[in-house]
Length: 225
Image 1 (spheres, rainbow, N blue to C red):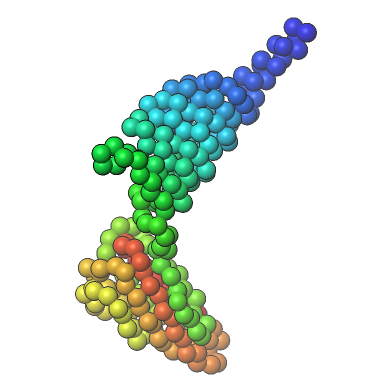
Image 2 (cartoon, rainbow, N blue to C red; image 1 turned 120 degrees about the vertical axis):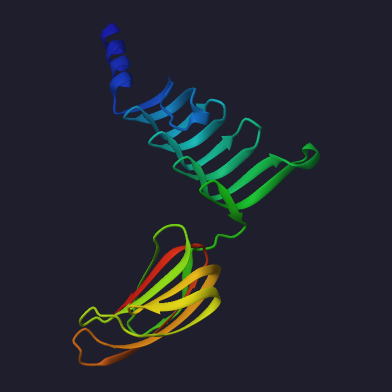
C-alpha cells in the first residue's frame, strides 16, 4: 500500500500533465501569480484551471497564460466572460463592470488584444467582388497608414499597369510600377482593373477585384494570376 502511494505521488510530481495541484509560479500573467489549481504541461498551466493572485481566472490555459474560454475577475471586481488569446481578451465576450454612481453595467461585443472594438467584429480587410483569374495576397507589414498595390505579370514577373479607383482619403503616387496611397484614412476601398496574359502567354485575361481595407496598417496588396 505504501509503495502504491509513493508511486502515485511521484507520478503527480513528475508527470507530463498534472491535475488538481496547488502550485505557484505556473502562471505567467503577473496579475494571476499566486496559486494555481489545474492541469499542467511542462510546469506551466495548460488546459483547464484556476489561478488566483491580484486578479483571478478560471478557464482554459495554454503555456501559462489564459487562452481560450474563461472568466476573469480583476482587482476592482470587474468580470469578463469570454475568449482569451495569449493572456489578453480577444474575441467575443461580456464585461460586467461598475459604471457611474457605482451602477453595474454590461458591455457585450468583441475584443482585440485587450481592447474593446465594438458590438460587431470587423475584418481587417474584405474582398467584395472578384473576376478573372486574379490571385490576391493582402497583408499588413506593421503599423502605419499606407497602402501599396502592385500587379505582377505571370509570364516574366514584371509589373503591370492597372486602373485603380479608390474611395477614401489618401495621397496617391506611382513609383517603379507600384501604386502607393500614403497618409491614408481608413477604411479605404479599391476597385482594381487590369489585363494580363495567362501563364503560357497564349491568351489575355481581364481581371477585376474590389478590396476594402478597414483597419490602419502598412498594407501590401500584390495581385498575380
